[in-house]
Image (cartoon, rainbow, N blue to C red):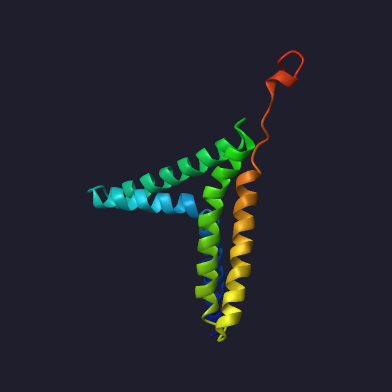
Length: 146
């Protein structure tokens, strides 16, 4: 009985971590799901659809990371980051609101918790996208060597 309780708590915790990770990477996850389901409905198998969705999500995240690390104007880079952060905030809000309906009876407190969850997920998405590898400037070196 106690083992089952701990196993249920572990399962709920793992599910919450999975939801949080998916909310932080909302745009790549959504694109991956869309491409995966499109591949599945076009007649490919489940394994190929999973691979297509995974590759599509990785490409979207890689594009966002490479644009952030490029020498583009700062306004353009923050616009791309905004494309990634807004879906993460939206997903974080609704995921927190739905999970809080299980334990919080007041609508006002559920909305307050949802706002806190949205802020946390949005800040995490911003931090995950903007903390990439630093851009190396070859012109700054004297002889072109590292």
